[in-house]
Length: 333
Ligand SMILES: [Zn+2]
Ligand SMILES: [Zn+2]
Image (cartoon, rainbow, N blue to C red; front, side, top):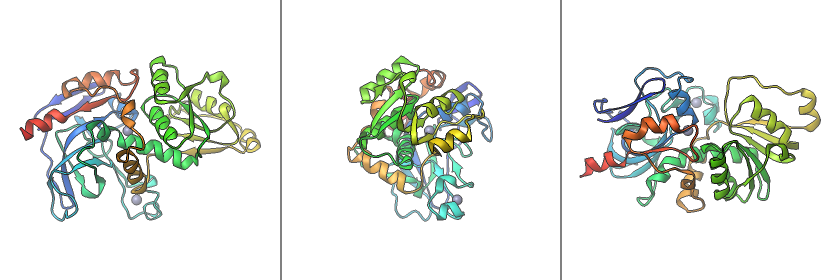
């Protein structure tokens, strides 16, 4: 079957001899229709994030249609349209039992320590596929997962309606945070160096703000997580406010305990989402037309344009995604 694989850092190739997945008991096979790209994928693409082997199939944000079911699967059927939840928690550890599956150390992560979604077909544990209405567009399949990440960050921050929030960075996660905040009647302000991304954030309904004017925010989301944005976030947060760190970077950052204690700041890391509630809530919001995450997407690119999409994804405004629907229509036709 066909797949889009990373053969070495910065090199993405389209292959047609990738091994066909076989569903193990409890798994289904999904014919992939849409896969979004995010910063984590780009970390793999650029060679900053190690994967088990090369060539490697990347991608963890997406969905398609079930084409086969393995033994023991009774609650999913072929033909169902599904979104994939790409973090397979163990359900046995202390964190999983407490409902904080995002902290599970045994987590299988699609595209990182398990093969990714940029393939014609993938095998997925049935319980990590979420059926959606037949009418759900492919664009939605590509962005439910990163929207769940954004909504979990908003939930963990305790944002209330009317809160003015600062979003540092308007890459795809920053834009989806704006969508999530606006849906909850909060008021997002965005700091971002690229004009095209700022313009897109404004189109969605966020306001732009100059970094020098950003002060007094009860909640600040740092989607970049680099030393410069950490400093900006600490300057911009109000006393007794919360800084939510979403972007990740290995460089150490600093502050003083005096500043933290005197201003009574809360520093909150936020990683993915917790199974099953965050994904369930996000799907309910999307399929209930509460919000439309597709407004942050660019035009979907064909599989043969994937290499170009990876190369440009760091700089373009809006979220890049690969449209694999032609592969499924070949098969149906
Ligand atoms: Zn992602
Ligand atoms: Zn666990």
